[in-house]
Length: 120
Image (cartoon, rainbow, N blue to C red; front, side, top):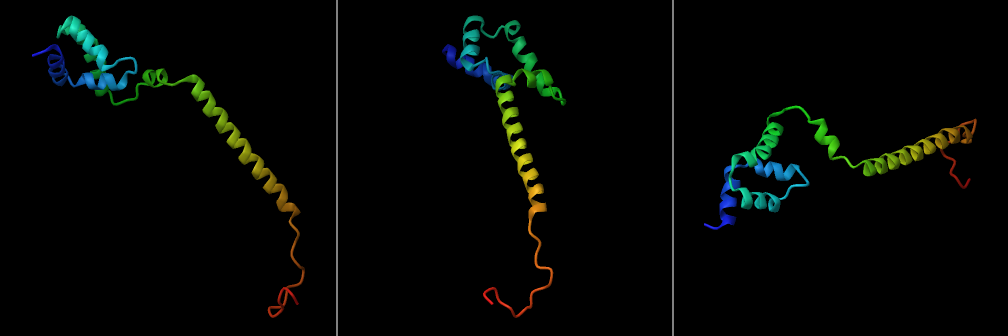
């Protein structure tokens, strides 16, 4: 069996590696394969990968550190600015609408006869 097939069977035996690759942007299957190629299935090398994925799977509460770590500050600031612009636009529309309510001309003071048409 070649090294690639050995790594595939090792990864199948340790499904926590799948979670680790999915949850960490800086880790890829290529990096894990390179570690396997150098160290093999030495458990001391793989413990950090198993511990972090197991601890995240067993905890039922949110891990705020990982959430905050994955937030891009520049993107967040852009979203906040666009939300502020949208809120300002809505506020401007509602203020104009409220001021226009007072300017609406009032209807005729006496009711219009039912049989009278617009052109009459």
